[in-house]
Length: 433
Image (tube, rainbow, N blue to C red; front, side, top):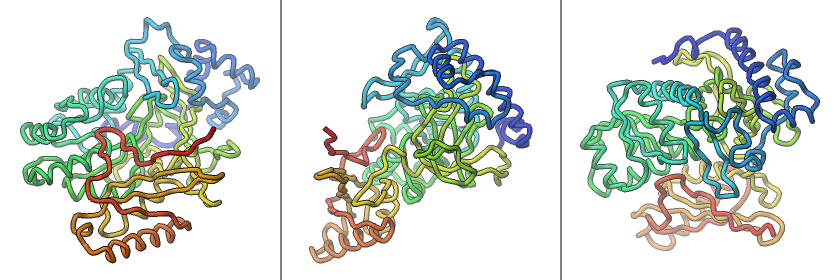
């Protein structure tokens, strides 16, 4: 199902022409309206008129999260504060939060890209969308909400939490689309099983899951337990919120709404732009945002871009599933490891539940990892020798997959914390002082 055939299925030549037109307009706009960018462009000795091709974007300086924090709260706005009709922020857990300001035009654009997102997973005006993303300063809840309204679907703005009530509402109102983090989807499935709620009692057909990294194994678990099609959504506060990219049922990458968000992949080390198909750090430029456009924002997310028409009919560039963050990379005894690689290996072992925690410490000068893993009830009741065998099997399999032996600790079912929002998969206990 195509939401906006002209935008999503145009030829590459048509799209590049549109992108260049919008990029040139945006670069000139931020130079004139945002003191930060005027100063940064001048320092780089680049003028807006020098952007004559899409490749010329590489002449522009990057924007980092630290820049937004330094501009807190309104320093990155391109319009007077009174023209900003809505504000969202990041969590701010590592310092001042990132502030995102939206004009009325921005909200209309956000609703448009989110309308495309929900349509991509099969939603329409006949669907009931149970929106379990948090409402408030977090962008997830309202982003989904605006998209649902745009396509005329019925939205249940239930937000996160009160899991048993969520399941009751799901049954009473016949929810067909579920939107939440993948870890919360698993928790919903777990509680449903405890309450004796079978898939036959639910009408779910698809789920839009994001806001945290997850693997194919987690997808398999969600689809098996909730009997729906689990699809990946991507977005970030700095660019717009959810709606930057969405996976279609073909499951061969997330389609980026590149008529609004221009993507690049760079090497985190050299900062050079990498060719199509090479893995690196995703950089995004908002080319239609009015209130707070971002120029070459470094997302820190590691992925790759792939072109070519998708089986769904869309010609939008596709990004691979996020496999880690360039700043989350761990160096364990000289081996580079992403937490997502550990998860992938872990969930390939039978007898393991999709609930785990990676504990990172730095006792000396290199990071060390311990993985706490929940096991099934049946396995937990087995003899000690069977548990030792399973522990060794997990350690062997992880070593085979990532080239490093790490400590594994088996824990009883439901002993690790559950999350109604983003799961805390990695517990960082390193002391950098």
